[in-house]
Image (cartoon, rainbow, N blue to C red; front, side):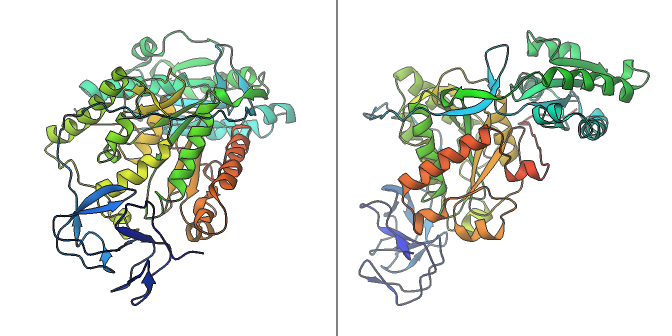
Length: 496
C-alpha cells in the first residue's frame, strides 16, 4: 500500500494514506512533523495568502507561511470563498462512452414505474399517530411471518415512517411536509400504502389527497383514527388487504436504465474524495450512459466546487437553474443570519478535511464526469434521465429522505467515519477506508478503501456496479438487515 497520493499533477499538497512520520521523504520533501492518515502535507513553501491546491483546485488560502513538509490543516489554511456570486457559463466538452447494458430483477408497477422493493408502508400524516403506526407495523409483520411461503417471498416487510410533522407548521414547512409525504406515498418501492391520519391536523388526509393526485385504490388505503371506533382493528384489516394486493407482484428482468439512484455522503474524511466518492462517480457515469438516472444533493457541500457542475450543464437553461440552486441556498443561510461557510463538521476535520472547498471538491466527485441534465427543487420528483442536481441540505437524514422523495430506488451513501442510519429506501454504505469497513461490518456494505491498496478503479467499479444490481434485485443492505428505516423533512420555519 502506498503511504501517500498526489491527486492532481498541479497540487502543492499530498494526502497521507497512512500516518507519515517526521523525517519521511515524500516526493523529495522531508516531513517536518507527523501527518495523520487522510491529512495533507505541503510539497513546497506556501506563503501567507497563497492558495493551497488539491484535486487541481484551490481548497483555501494559507493563513500563515507554510514550509515544505509541514502538516496542512485548519490551523494554517482557511476558506477563500465569498458569498452570493455571479457566474459565467463556460461549458466544457463532455466525452461519453456507452456502457454495456445490464438488467436487475425488479417489480413493474401498473403506472409504468419500476421498484426494487415490494414493501407495505404506513405513512402517518402527523406525529400524533406515530406510536399507532409503529404498533400497526409490528403486528402486521408478526402476521406476515406466519403467512404462506409465496406471500413472504413477494412482500418484503411492513414499515412505519414516524415523524414529528404535519401540524403546527406554517408556510414552506407545511408545504414541505405535504409534498414529501405525498412523494413517499407515490413511491414505487411501496407495493401498498396505509395513510394514517388523526383527523384534526393541518395536513389531514383530505388535504393530503390534493398532493397525492390520482392513486390506485387497491394500493393506497386511508384511515382517520378519530373517526374509527377501533383504529388498530381497522388498520389490521386494511393492511391485510394491502398485503394481498402487493403479493400479486413478482420480480422480473428490468433494464438497469430504469434505475434511479441517489448519491449522498456523510461523516466524510480525507479519503472520501480519493476512494468512495470517485467510485460512486464512476457508477453514475456507467448508469447514465445506459440511460439510467442519478441524483446528487447536499447543496451546501457544492459550495466551492459549484462551477465544475455549472460548466457541465448541458445547456444555458440548466446552467441558470444550477446558479439559482446555489445562490438560493446561500440566501437561505443569510436570511437566517448564519455563516454560509460554517463547514466542515468536527468529524470531517478529524478525518483530514480542512475547508469547505476541500469537502466540496471531494463531495462532488460523486457526480462523475457526465452532463447535468436536470435540476430539481426540494420535493420535486425526477423526470429527466441522466445526472440531476437536487436542492436539499447536507444533513444526512433530511438529504437522504429528499433523494427517496424525488424517486431514488436506492441511496448510495459514502462515509469515512461511519453511520448506521437509513432512509425510506435501501441505503447502501460505502466506506472510504478499509479500517472502517473492518471495524463496522454491521454498518458497511462495500469497502472502497481497496482503491488505495491493491485494486484499480476499473475492477472495483465493475464489482461495485454488480453489487448495486444485486441490491436492486433484492439483496438487503446492512441497515435493512438491522431493521433501520428513517425519514426526516427539511424544516426551516416557525412552529406554532
